[in-house]
Image (cartoon, rainbow, N blue to C red):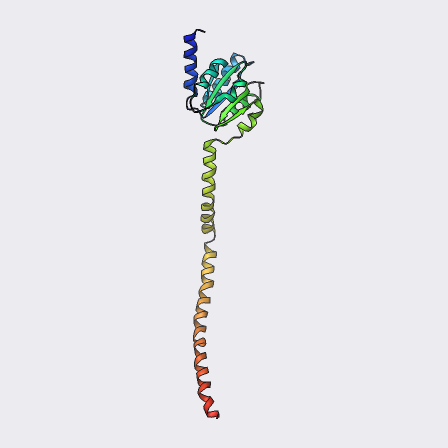
Length: 201
């Protein structure tokens, strides 16, 4: 590869990485042409970009990206490397896991997800279980809606109970009104007993 070709290759990787929030580096070595094509096909269906790159060029491209220090991943750039770019945090990890049900590869080398670095294939399960932005938003909406649903269902399922309580409360109010005059008579009775006191003398 000439110097000019390297410059072009580095720029292509930079364009791929620019603004990416989810970056995986995987080892595809050992997959034959057919299996490699199948992996790429499945990645394409899930909007995951896959590009096999030279380790030195990948490192140089990452070193030129502003705002992110990818140096934690550099130690994993050995052998065959493929960059996987996705908008969904756990999509590449799930794809690798599903493909590994039948094959030994791909293996995860490292990943940059949600501003956190993951180094080593042992992080694959953790990455696969990360909730995507859409899943988190869905859960938040569900939590916000659940109290409203509870109130609505309570109102829809128990209208009779509400009316019954209102009817029970009404007689109690009427009884209270009827008892009020009796309470007013008490001062008159005490007044009469006061007037009768002098005659006793």
